[in-house]
Length: 233
Image (tube, rainbow, N blue to C red):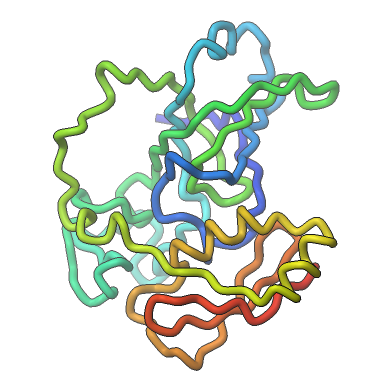
């Protein structure tokens, strides 16, 4: 089967480090879904404005496989980052990008539809856990009466679903970056989710994260993240 790329996701995530591990229902981070020329057809989106949420089917285009095992190889087990990277789970019991077919599934909130002169209709969504430039293979409406299962169990992921860090930034630095137009609410949301791998817990290590045109330096001590600096790239 040959999949057609119908669109690409565009947002501030220029690197994998910092991307949310799952889609988030209350996210303030916007992603623009821009269709490729062949699928830039208005009729294809007729009626989509009646839905509040959508499913995106997309590709892990930067999930690099080990060269010594071949590009078509796969592993039946993976090491989920939230389990510290030391415990193996079955690949089909995780959302790891290293799968037999590197396909992702994400539910997003449809914020609006922009009518642009050069890109046609653009979907503006929130809650996407996608890298900038991610290829989109399909878009389907989210149906609450069939897709929502409040009684569902979430396996090992339930233990960390409420995990977050308190984010601290000095008043002086905050005032400085807000004056420059820094999207602090978006950056704070990303940092609070703890972008570090679970096996890294060095309170003296300085981490670097890029988002949009901003570079963020931070350290983490216990459950608090301290922003060291934020500068425009």
